[in-house]
Image (cartoon, rainbow, N blue to C red):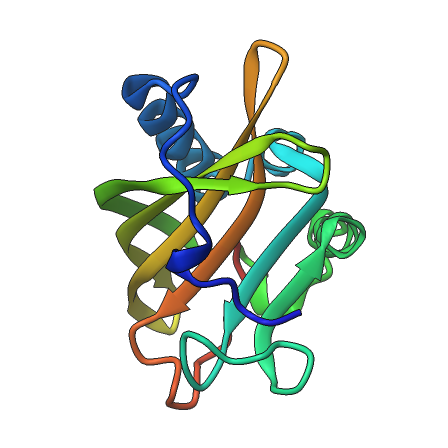
Length: 175
């Protein structure tokens, strides 16, 4: 899979309301911050992709290393590991709070099911507080939201850390 470009986008689909989308993004962030793994996992579509590239924003994840490159099955496996309480990178769990800002509707992107997902870009800052000290993580997230019935679902999340070209400290939480 190679990174899709903004030129692949079509106009923003009309069925996405800005307030509803923003509330969805804020809720996804809160679930991650508060370690509500069941609620966070329930947001994802069956064909979801969760990607945190390393060494640049537009690498080919099939040829270059990524910090995270999970399909839906791997997302579920990752969360099962976290729920055991034996994930030592998060024992005890970090205290987290994130800010999401500069939310932009980038356009629509056709999906494999014949529909159109809404592609969104947003900047973020995460404060991680641990016994070893505090860490600030920042970057840009690209989301793809899909309407399934009367609710929004997360089909894609790409998190590009500002300093992903440098060694990354242990990232044991949901970014």
